Image 1: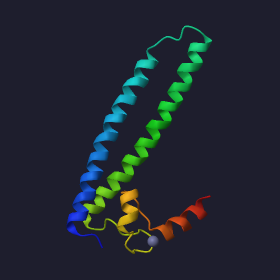
Image 2 (image 1 turned 45 degrees about the horizontal axis):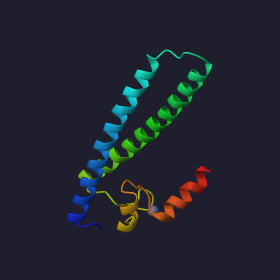
Image 3 (image 1 turned 60 degrees about the vertical axis):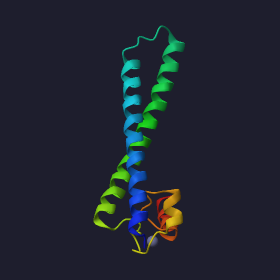
Length: 118
Ligand SMILES: [Zn+2]
């Protein structure tokens, strides 16, 4: 299990990441609304604009899903269940959490999960 200090450290990192994502989301949103107000001059312009908006939307989706993972992790820290696998209830392991601090499953369950979903 994680010590209180380790838990605090992960909480600090998660909160910092959350701030960063919120900042990114704000930027992307501003960019998207700016582009919506922009009149494409020709076909080429329009294609570039559409492609860019597509990329921004994808980033937006990605960041939003990471944000919800982080929220879940933060709730778990409050409840004291952070770092425990949701499937087998074994500790996820600090090494894995260091790589992915919002991991919900241990490596073994993650592998099973991925197989089921692919
Ligand atoms: Zn597990």
